[in-house]
Image (cartoon, rainbow, N blue to C red; front, side, top):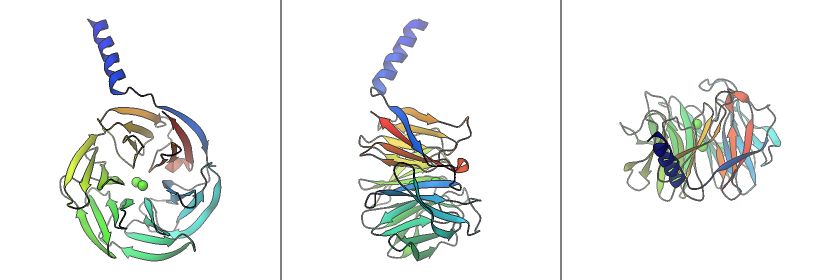
Length: 281
Ligand SMILES: [Ca+2]
Ligand SMILES: [Ca+2]
């Protein structure tokens, strides 16, 4: 019976994750970054922006900065933009890189490397990830348990967009096909909100925190849990752990994924690097 049961389980696993996902380490930056929290690919310039917290994730100490790296892990410019507090999630619209910075959104002109726009969000406690829809509306999460809000910045005005019991320490954000997907680290679920109506629905249970939230060419989610685990979740909700460096004390913060090249960029937070992997499937 036991044997029968285990062969049944093997078949079940084979059916639900028919595809094999093999992860290969490609390279990494040198460990000279300073608490990197988020990596964001710029397809126009073909390089990546890395948000460096600098020191304390919630201190307004001016020690945060943005680095530019290339896809091979070379640091092109370590201190491209300095004087930020604790920059985290970011997104690009036009030639502006928008970054969360504790209780404000900063818009950096990518051509001049100058901060051109600042939006104060004084009630925010811990702004975290950011995503921009095709119309240029900016969404950003406040992960503090007291707030648990997804804000929206539209026509230069900030409003509380998603809050209430469905929104629980939101962190990772992703815009895809008319929806804002958000990762709740509180209830450990990926949910999505219709961009038109704001109506929220459950997408997948993760059983873990959700710092980075990306989608691949097949509709699989790729999430990181900050502690060190990176997981692929199929549209049916099945999970495959791609990487786990938790035991080594290497974090996996807000990752980037380039679907065309299947490249994964993981900022390692306290480990001060960005690791680069390729997913073969
Ligand atoms: Ca992000
Ligand atoms: Ca984050």
